[in-house]
Image (cartoon, rainbow, N blue to C red; front, side, top):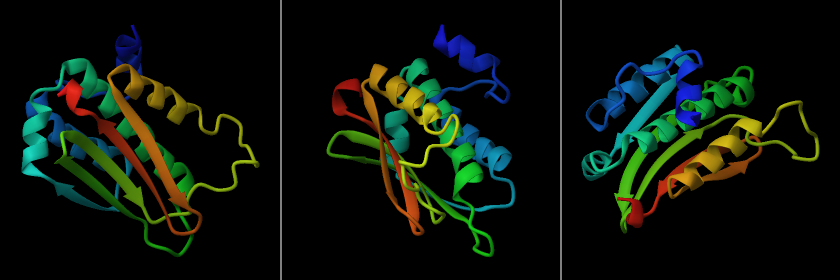
Amino acid sequence: KISNLLKILPFHPGDLTALNFIGEIKNLVKSELPGESVSYFLDENAIEKLQSLEAVALEVIYYAIRELLRNILRYAIIPDKKLEVKISLSFEKSILELSIEDNGKGIQDSSVSRVGSGQGLILHSTMMAVIGGALIKESHPGEFTRVRLVLKKFFL
């Protein structure tokens, strides 16, 4: 049900399979962060491991990435500083990890709450847990934010 709900939201991939997952992610980045500097670091072994993921897992990861990219555009930009985004996919010690890092504002003081702030990440963190993974945030205000989407070996 959640997968179908996510599909009716604006901008969803036409045919999300393991074979075209990276291409769909790159299309998503172009759509969500047009004109921004984005670097990719993709481990061939990790790309191979994508083949073993079920379609629902690919969808959960895809929509989590979309939320992260939208958050970068919404919260990370610092005036007069070029935004740089790094997207990494790795496979080490039987763990598949997709990481998105920006050089923006970082996550600011959590005691100052904005309306709706954090709700998307909570949803996607829950969805990652449902598929046997985790969404892990790391941030230093004024320096960077990195979010890691991690899948453990038992799922692969």
